[in-house]
Amino acid sequence: MRWASFRRAARFSGSQRRRWWNYGLAFLSAVCTVLLVADVGLILDLIHSPHGDGLALNGWTFAAWLGWPDASWGWLDRYEYCLLGLLATLLILATIESLLLLLLRRSGELAAWNAFAQLQIAVYEQVRRLGVPDWFEREGRQLEQRILGDCLTIREGLAACWTTVPRSVCAGVLLVGVAAYIDFFLSLLAFLLVLFIWRLYQKMQTRADIANRNGQAQLATRQQAVLDAFRTARIVEGVTAATCDDESFAVAFDRYRRDARYGATARVALGPWLVWLLGMGAALFLLVVGLSPRPVPTGLAVLALTLARLALPVLRLQGAMQTLQRADEAAEEVFAYLDRMPGVGQIAGALAISGVSREIRWEGVAVAGHTGKTLLTELSLSIPAGSHTALVASDCHTPLTMVGLLLRHQDPTAGRILLDGTDLRSMTLRSLREQIAFSASDGMLFSGTIADNIRCGRGGYAQDQIDEAARRCEVFETVKRLPDAFTTVVGPAGTNLPASTAFRLGLTRALVGNPSVVIVQEPPETADEEESRAIDTALQRVRAERTLIVIPSRLTMLRAVERVFLIHQGRLHAEGTHAELLHANALYRHLNYILFTPFRDVLPCGQNDVR
Image (cartoon, rainbow, N blue to C red; front, side, top):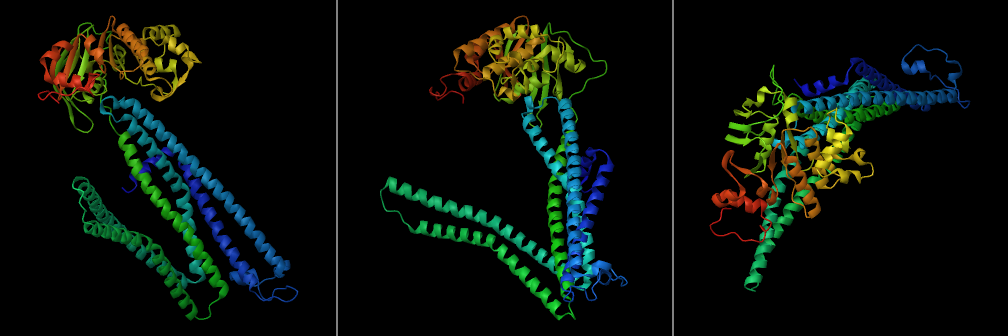
């Protein structure tokens, strides 16, 4: 169905009564437009009517102009009174039309904004259902920004649909009726001429666009030839000091200049062609008018005014249809997002866990990203409870994919993940995410107070608990030095906080619930030694009495962990301590050099080293 997505978006505005109210206002404003044209016609006819020296009208009445039976109009039989009356009517009609347009646009905009608000609420609910896919698919924030932009486009389309479209359609139909009533033949001729000129101009524009695209491609080739001539001259002059042949450059530059001039001429020629077509159409129309029997000047003036006024709703309707087309495309993307099914669900009778006491085991786990690319293939490993483990991979997505699987933002397509022998899919999501907490490198802060960011929607945490968690993460004193302490408002991703402070606040959020497993994406190494020591101290305290899984970014962290799991091409490639892997695994040595060695930019690679 055409405009199916846009029609679906329109239903978010609520009641149908407001839409019919808009349509009624649009019709009444269009009627006022037609009455204004008729009133101008009466004024023009009155001005050209015969009247005596005493300004008494000689045979001109409203009834005669409108085709009604002749009757006396009293004081309106005098020219000056009649003219003033028509001008007053013109002002009254213009005022009424302006008020109707104001009501129409206000009502249409309110309905469109209401639909926009409901769409935003629907997007928010869908975000909650889908979780945080950008942790492992790297698309969440960009997609949500694009979706909100699409919602604004839909709002513009709905506003046009409920204001510009009905108003333009009603005005256009009524003005066509007036033009046909004045002179059906001349009106038909004018419509046919305009339609012919418009279609011919469209074909010319299409040809010009095709020629412009081809010309741009050809121009790029010509430009490359000119650049090659520059390069040849530079090399010849620099290597041999010989005089370079200028003929090749002259030929290339001449072709480039000719093609550029042709493309510019083709683009600017459309305007003059349109003026010529309009002039020819006007000449043909006036020829027919001149040859028609007894043309009435006033009738021709009113017809011209009607046709000129008709152009405005036609142009507005054309622009509105383009807006509606963009809105329909945006609605398709928005509803494609809203129709997504959550990647995970909770089974009936799911178990609530109280902690991880033995191990986290991965058995033949496989998963693909949202693009279909395989990220993990038959991954099997075991992380003992209470251990300090690092995840190192040959690509940046694999560790975050593993985080998303542990938090059940996505389920594996094959294999399973067990906590103390129990499959993750048989556990409640709330208890799972209470016992496994993730701390991102940027803190993942949202707009709100620091205390709200630490609570993260979880009630029941007293300020004393927040203070204690902040002390353990070495951020309490830093927060207390802020003007409003824990009530200080921060922006998304901690935009008005230092990076290390934002990270430690994210760590505090993870620790305040006292989880049994904490996953930390370590921030990039900072040049500030004091900040680096604070992060090290916080991570040492986090490690106590719980399992700590780290996605490292510093060499000191690799040396501190008890075990390193090396993931390559979706499989477990090697495991062991940092020293063991450096000694036994070439890939690990390569990644250690690329990712963690502070002298990687100055130390040369040996001939036999892995790159």
